[in-house]
Image (cartoon, rainbow over all chains, first blue to last red; front, side, top):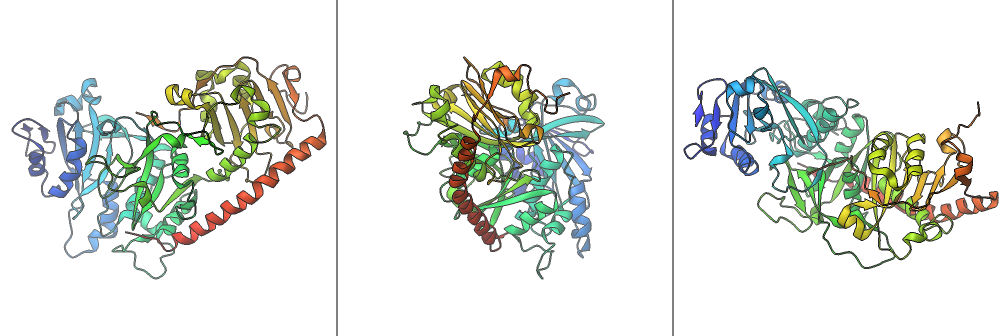
Length: 489
Length: 60
């Protein structure tokens, strides 16, 4: 049923008579079949109603319009259409009155640009529309204003390339940077033309528009100019642990640029299968990446929340790629993180195997157990915020951690019994390492917590040389793993 | 006021120095460096090569 079809805010309620093709007719010429085929597979299961907002002025499209489309002889409209999706039928008056039931059924929006061949502009959809309902993702939030009402959506920003002013490289950068500016005040919002300018500061004689693409180092350079400290990982150079490192950064709540042949996408979550068979005892440590079976991605050629499975697509909505197709990833590290994941892992493993402070020397309760490690970066603020709810297995550990001066970012390597982690997500200890150190400093560890022992550097805590002290803990319990970097669905 | 504050009440009773002798601490540091440096150098080389490869990777 369509209400107010000729008005500024038509409402389409899906029923037997009016399906998704009715939306196509209602929003033409901006929305085309290609655009509909992107939205429909993602939304069909949950969306029951669409509110169309005509004559919407989108700042991102207006930016590329001003700098590129307006310079053509035949110009598209400067305005867009914004589609608002709801999981129940809604009316204009219910939205305007911010009716609680209506507000809670909001699934997000998609801006339809008058650009061909790709009309899907800025899009923000709630994670509820995902087909894969169990995942761990980074997400940000936005307030959305329509008809004088304020709606709210949490998800990950998406935009498709328009194939002229922006190609996949700019789109992926836009998605990543919009996530950061939405979530953290430290990063300013950046528009598509500014992104192109950032990435083509060293264009080496190539024209900027129409875009013929970018080299991946230009993406890293654009991130550097936006106050990040990017690092690049090539599969060829990290043969043994490339997928594990990619997972580790995602587990750290850092969305990444991931390149596949001639294309780049954004990865910002993982799907883990905790029923996976435990690996046989081996000299190398087992990490929680063992459970990972897919990365949650935004590919600008498709739609948000795709899953890039280890062995390729399992269903129609999955990414067509598999992990082997991933050639490289670029991590937008915060500027205060000097120690990278592989460096942190190296030095932490050396400590855990050390004859004086290692597991065999100081953690008799862990001897003979099938251990699992979980490595991630977080802020000490977030880590401390969750001390009380987690309990940390011992009141002494909780109290010491709460008071201990720490750097802004820390690497955390949780130690767990494999079965307990797989079944209950519980851990028995952790290593905390200063992320502002370099890998060659043996005194970068802040604390080392085993079930019955806590070692703490009380020297660095007060900006003095390392001074390690040992606390005997007595009986202690396993406790919940740290959850804050990612949103668990 | 002490120059180094107490981290937790009764810290002196709850915590003991990990290394009783300076020599033991020096040995610990040396052993760490011996193991860490070769691996960290290898990782640094992998980073350099990754950055070189990114100069050839065109995305469109």
